[in-house]
Length: 464
Image (cartoon, rainbow, N blue to C red; front, side):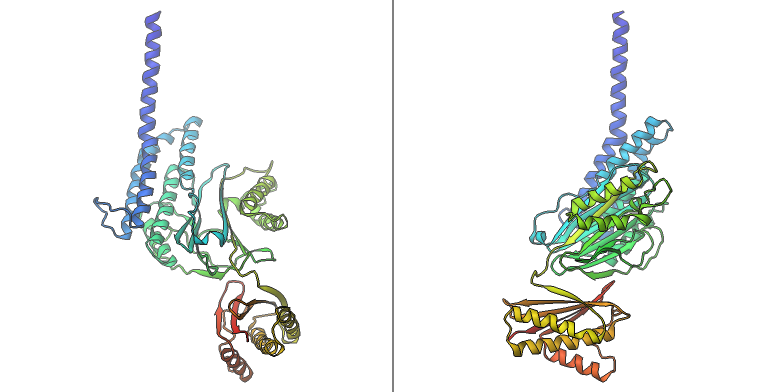
């Protein structure tokens, strides 16, 4: 009897040992290699690691090729785990995929001078996995922040590794100093060269935390939301290019907007919008925008906003469909001069008196002498007339005014849809030419910036 018991125990120990060896060889070691390689590629791209190996020559393309080669070998190592059809094997494969996807999550941002210029939060919602969703954010330099939200169609190990390749190569290219367009073109080329059936739907954005300039490229991703201060969340009407790796040659062009203090952006993967209710209506079509705007009344910070939207999505599909795994990022721009005040004025010349009254009141409150008040009000009146002429349709013009006593300057901004045309550029109309010349002569600086929804013109003049 003792011999039988000893034999059973020996067999059990042997089975456990064999099982552990298989687990280590097929799962743990490939995942460890993946983590190590990802860290090394980041160090390589930052110039902190010198790699001496076949195929590594220190050139930017080496990073992507090395990851691609590893992805193929690692996929071969671990694919056998999910080859069977049993629920246990399928569940184990899903745990491996979850582990890989969680390894993509960014680390906390380091402390830097831009830390007070924005608020940022990201979230990977747990749920039924149909795709490999991921997000990322990191600094390119002290004042430049990059955000990424992506999704690789499919929920297998190969797709999760493809997501790692995508995320790591984007980081690598941007940290090597490539522009956003160069980065997207490079990543697209390398992913396409893998020759597989996978592609990545990704939105990549870069924020200058000092001036609020935000540039982004949408390669097959969802349309992000923008909330201007004191307004509502609206979809950004921007072009969507082909997913990364789907086509051999794609011409990417960045979209750029200037964020003001309090503006918010919301990025999300497609799975969040594709939550279904009992009537098979999608969350993105029916409730997502409304949920975001309801969050405004509750004065949520970025983490709370993400949780609120998650809960609203779960409630929307309750008893009607599955809660899907999805990724999202919420970003608020916070840098700005709090002395700015603004007013909305109908963009027609007849309403110029509203701007005059607005400026007169603010100039008086700041103790500006009557003669100097008249000069600045005249500048504002001329600029308003030019903006009205440049507007592409009936609209409101947002006028922002700041009096910076420490600089002894007055800043006047006007926001309106002007078709990307600088109102100070001559249109051939004599009155317009004279107004533009007067503004340029009597201001320290005039600057125009085309935007997505609204363009912005700013003039800076000296106070006496």
